[in-house]
Image (cartoon, rainbow, N blue to C red; front, side, top):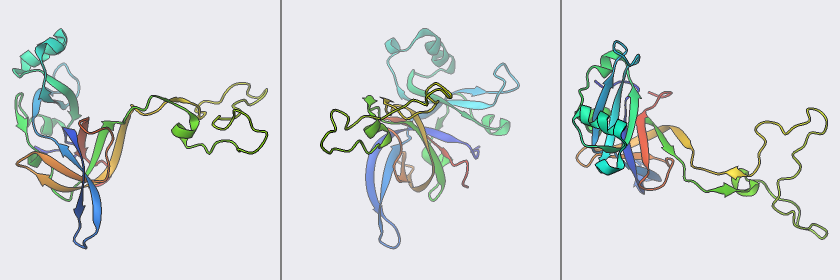
Length: 218
């Protein structure tokens, strides 16, 4: 049933360390993917127009769910979930899943596989150019006043007469959807539903992520 693009939803537990066969120490991120439940199966033959499955994890109180979403949960016959996402699959792969089915870590992933991790980066609020874009700042010699951390001139004079799109300036830093590609899956703990992924993944501890099979590496 597993498709080359199949993935699971998870919670970032935190980081730890492991040794390779040459006794080299490296960092790993532990992701808990237990509790994945199929909430819907999309089909291009029906009203959806595409093939996918909808996954959800972590039960939610009914009082915190709006009516349209609650209707979908009742239709699937499952309790409300906090984090819901869809995974695009081929027609044959999507038809292999059933609503209400639980999917475990070992059903999708195996050790030594390559994965992509999608998450939301830590939000750092409104930040200046030195923190947001790693600017060096202005010289701190005699005669420089109140200009140490500024971004400098942004103008282009008469031609083209406006600030160029994409100019590095102060603004919102973090809190964006990020995808880290081609991470090595070191270990799969099927009993506890844990994935040990080499390197870091976006977001804080406890944040929700999606782990899918790598697109660019097999």
